[in-house]
Structures are given as C-alpha cells and as structure tokens.
Image (cartoon, rainbow, N blue to C red; front, top):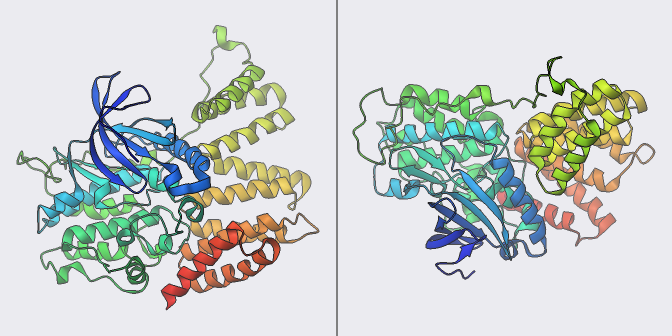
Length: 511
C-alpha cells in the first residue's frame, strides 16, 4: 500500500508521519483540519487479507467500530472516526504521546516488579470495561499498549483484532489464527471459542514478560510456540526474580492456566488480587513514563457498569403536551430510516423507548408488539449488545414455544441466537449446553430438520469444547462433522476446509 505524506483522508485528515506498518495496513500521525488537532490514522486494506470477503470485512469493521465506541474508559484509546475510502478502511484515533510497552520494557531491564503490577492493574481496569460491553480484544500484547508521559496506560487496537478474527478461515489467506503466537491462549490457537478468559491469558503472558524479561513460551516457529502454550507449564517467575512476591507469582500461574475454567473469573477479580501489591500512596517522583504514578486508585474498574440498562422513555406528566400517545407508526418509520443509514445504536434506543407505548396501545401480546420486539432483539444483536439481547430472545423463545410447541422453528431460532449471545458473552459452558439441547431438533427431519444449521451447531459445539479444554471430545465432534459435511457439500466447501484445518492443528499439537 503506497501512501504519501500530505494526502488528505476523508477530506479532513492530513497524513503527516508514518509511525508503523504491517501486512494489512499502516499507521500515520495526521492533522485533523476541522478541529485543529493531531490524531493517529490507521489505514487498512481488506483485499490484502480477505480476498473475495473484502465487503464482509468492511461491514464487520464498521460494526466493531460502533461497538468499540460504547466503551468509555480513560485507559482505552478514543476512536474519533471510521469509514472507507476507495479500497481502504480508515480508523481515526486520539494521538497518544508516550512509548509502547515493548519499548518501555526494553529500556528498563530489569523492570521493577511494582511497575509490572501497576501496568497490569491498569490493564485490568480497561479489560473490565471492555468485557462488560462485551468485547474481546484478542490481541493484547506490549505493542498494543502505550505508556503515556503521566504513567497512565492506554490500550490500542480494540475491535480491529476482533473483526479480523471473527471467521479465521475466511479472513486470512493461510488460515492461521489472528493474533501473536507468543501471547495466544490455547483455545484461540486451536480455533475454539474466545471470551474474556482469552484476554486474561494474554495478560498473564504480558505480566510474566514484564517480571522475567521474556515471554513464558518462545520458539523458532509459530507452531512450536503454540505447542508449548498447549502442553508445557510456565516457569514460575520467582525462579528468575526471587524478589517477586509469592502472591504475584501465583496470580501469573493462574492467568496462564491451560484450561480457561481454571483462570481467574474476570478482570475485576485480577484487579482485586493486584490491589494489595500496588505501591502505597505517596508523592509521585515527577519522572515521566512511570506507571506507578497514577495510583491513588483512580483507574479502579467500575463493576456497576457491567450491565447496560435499556433506555427508558422520558417521563410524561398529565399536564405536559407530550402526554399525548406517542406515534408508534412514526417511530417504526424512524427506525427503518436509521437502519437504512446504518445508525444501529440510535435505532436500538428508539425501539427500546417505543416498546412500552406500543404495548399500552396495542396490547403486550399483539402482533405489532411482537414484531417490534423481534426487531429490537435483532437490532441489539446486530449492534453487539448481547447482554441486552439475551433476555429478549429468551422471552420470545418461551412465548413462541408456549403457543406453537418446543419444536417450532421460530422458537428454536430464538434459542439459537440466545446461545450465540452466551458465546459472545464469554460463557462457553452455558452456550455449549444450549447448542447441545438444540441439536436434536435440527437433526430431526420430521420436526424441523435443517442439515446446514445442524452442521453449524455441531461446529460451534466443537469449538466450545476446545474453549472449555475438552480437546478429545472436540476432535471427535469435528471429525464426525467433517465426514457429514463432505458427504453433503463436497470436500471443497468452506466449512469442510475450516474443520479440516482445525483438525490439522489438533493433530499437530498432539504430535
């Protein structure tokens, strides 16, 4: 990709200095002409990675940018703008003045262990807010972390790794998992379902590196590194740095557990384990780039923000002119317009606000309200608001099943989408149980048999088995699925290629 200094992106952002580049894009410092400020601009070329799936990547990229914009935290780089121009996608972010964590570590060896605790605690605060959306970073590593001049830590590239890793086999030429092998959790490397636990593993790798000076698993090939992630225990850091507190060593080993179920339950939990090890309150030295400086506990996670309440309609008093009944039809037209313009978050808010009025005017179980609730759940899903979509889908599924039976295709579809929500929310065991309960219905041709959907459910079951650490069952599930998919669709179909590649990874890791 050839880009010249002085080029103006989107009629507004004048590129200045190239500060980084990789196989799929470049990062520039730039000048926002409209607001008279410096920004960072990331330019991505979908065709360099995705081939024929470039349009799908663009759609996912813009969706992830919307989801990322929901996270409000001082430790997360602010996204100012996003879009496409010609063949490129562009992402405009705040410019962060500081050093990336890899350089910060390289210039300060050995890294003081209180600094490592301070960095990890700030990262936990960011991850706690990110996972509440829910978003999984998928590529947490020192190059994606900046230490600012005041010592505060800023996380970069949220959403970009997520969009690239949504469907590994379709979005890469090689089929290799997106991410950095040195920081990649076993379930991510094996193509299993990812969740908050995946980021916690990467945090464990990063913390081990800060404390010991090196990642826990290194090697000359990516496959060799991934094999060590899967089968070798990490070296306890106190064998390298005896001055590291025992409690900190235990935490690192828990974060690096092979089985996601054996890692800490959340970033909030990790923060609380780190809090007693943080430097005591005192006067900062005044030196720049000291990550202990911010700790008067201003960046502690906000657990009360884990749940995002649905928007409530504005209160109306009898004396107010707005006491007249809201125009449900006009609101529906507004939702259609917003969705047509891609303004999904606004559409969600309008739907959430109009539902109570529609239920009052037409009845809670009327076809009009049922249609609005279906649209509300679907729009929440499309906007990545899985925590809010889940109860809506469960209620729709139960109501439909009560009317038409448990095998009703629409009820099953709601349950399938609810299982997808559980998967995205980082609850692999619950998602696995729901998919397993659904599978007999999709395999029964006399009820609502759907071979394609049945195959998709079985594929998801295999990936979730990887996520919960049951590799033998995952291998068996995917091997049997591969035979059925090849028989029905041929060996060259995309799903068969994907499953074969995952099985190949499993076989290589076993060997």
